[in-house]
Length: 103
Image 1 (cartoon, helix red, strand yellow):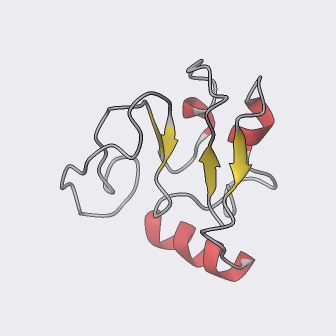
Image 2 (tube, rainbow, N blue to C red):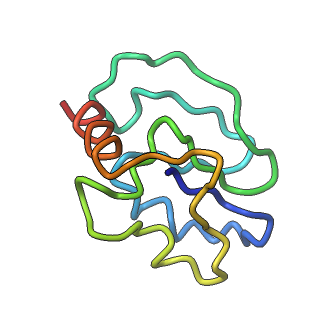
């Protein structure tokens, strides 16, 4: 399961540096799958949110492979980051995704 950032986000930037997969972007900023990973797809994709930070589900592993807990949730001062029930994945799937992102 990936995480998502809800409307309580205050755009403080605390979560960005904590993400081992470079999966968190400022609202309105496009992203690429290659940035911060070993993937080759550097196609610029549209931002997933305009006004608040957002998480790219294809890059989020809930920190599996890097940490015991999602670091973004740990550092968010307003509890604006939650597990996303629309993107459920097992621990094994998250680990495989992490390994693919950092091959």
